[in-house]
Length: 411
Image 1 (cartoon, one colour):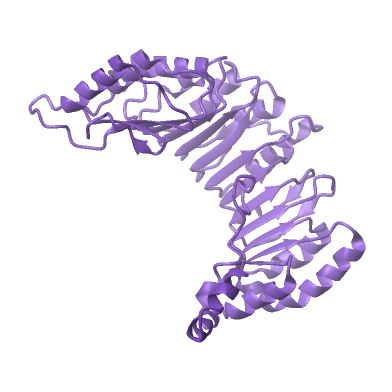
Image 2: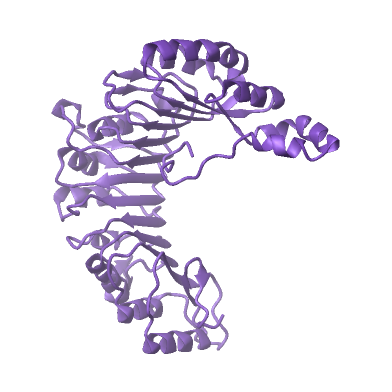
């Protein structure tokens, strides 16, 4: 509820449900009140300070999560902060997850360092505030949303960093400085913010530990071009490639970005793939990719991808093999168009999980799976018959819809 995907999450469970449990019987009442671990299931939310105090008190000395929402007007803020101050002073060392909305920079500077055992910190600012922020915290997992100005962080301590609706040039500046990152995700960054070209990197920088990288790409924007040209990710395992509305075109910076990768890449996610230049041509050298996740891609882009998967070859060492020869799964969500079923069938055929030449028994190893979600495909009779024959012949292939195997394909 308090992370990057808060806009799609449901409400967190309210501790008021405890009242229903305590009313069952005297024994239930005593058990509930004597179970600290039960009370840590709830977020100590300051929307009701009394309930917040109860959660913190009943959870004893166990780690807890807290959520703070500060009013915008100064009078209400001072009153609210005065009520919170003694509560936070007593329990700050127990708080492991903290979400803070609309706290002024002075509060962040004074209080964030007091949460000495914090493991996840999510800070969301008021979009209209333009002041720069300095955050000193031992926290290794940080989520920042709606900060329009420059940010100062404990750069060397951050391992997981999620940014949302922060000017893109600030995001790149932060990325370059956080050299110990393991996971970096960027969502919904405004591109029309003013850009000081002197803030952009002028030489390659390496993030030696980064395994997960997500970025919304517009390779015609100067910040995106700088990111593509200078970011080196030698340990990357998962790439989340999000295309902006105009799509991604072939460019020198795009080629440079993929040249900086190593063979560690094992998962690719493409969101909003458009009918322009297909970035799938840059993935041909990544022979260890096992999963391909395609979300909200248009039909022409999907046709291009499956054309590559079905027919194209690449060199792995000195051996010619299908593109992404170790691919084991394709996940398709919110497709804007139709699938070319002949190409999908050929993609099944090219999978390396084929019957053994020396036995009629199915080959060992995990099956090759294609899964479609959020839409139904009207599979043709010819497609069904061919896929059934493949399974009966020993090919280890699966077709899923809505998180379960299709009923007409034998297992």
